[in-house]
Amino acid sequence: MQLAPDFSSSLPSSAGEAAYRALQWGKNYFGLAHKLTSTRAATAWADVLRTLQGSPAGASQAGRLSPATIAAAQARYDALLTLDWQDAEAGYYPSDLLFDQDWSEFARVYPQVWVDLVSISDRVVNKRYQEFAADIDTEGYPSYYLQNFHHQTDGYLSDRSASLYDVQVDLLFGGCTDAMRRRIIRPIIDLATRRPDKTSRILDVACGTGRTLRMLRRAFPKSALHGIDLSPAYLRKANQTLSAMPGELP
Image (cartoon, rainbow, N blue to C red; front, side):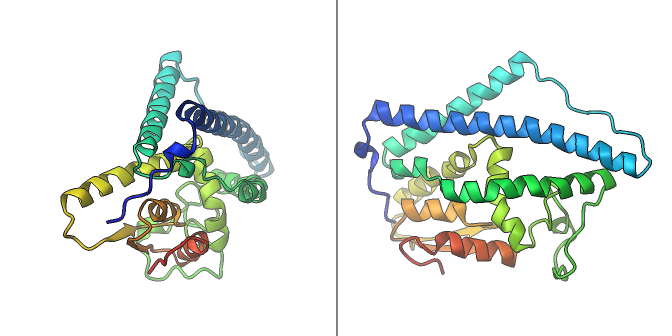
């Protein structure tokens, strides 16, 4: 199995790590600001909907986190960043993968996330957890899959949902989604090192939009990558995500 070339030397270690941490903490604070703002906006819109329906305004269920909880979450986040940087510096994957952020895509999608918030609030208020557009074929899917897990429009079964997903989930996890996904790379490399006789093929089950496969392609440029998912829309997005990458995704 082909390991990633060590690109960590392309950046001075201290400067590179400082830049990486600044990027990640910036994304984290942005995600937190988005969460606070969007929650307030969604609550206000939900109260409007309830008023129009003749229902009483809902009581806010948000509570304040204790300083100890906030400090513990920040420590866990910082520990994740440390592991991510150390694995890149050790050559498990290219250091520039830590900065793999399509800002033009983010700028295009982020306003749509806010537009979708209106529909999300409506579904939350009316407790519609299995609502899909009329042109979406839901035949044959397991019942657990036919729901709006985060109240997003069309669940996992539309191209619109697939186009918003990566930005939505990264906001949800405070900008550390890719860092969490990269935790899988080192164990795969360690396993391959212990079993060099095995064919170099990797299967990503429930590959979604292909972000994990995109990172695996950088770490394993010679390996055959395979991705499967229940959602045709998300597979189309995965193919789009990987289309500019070297190598083929069977």
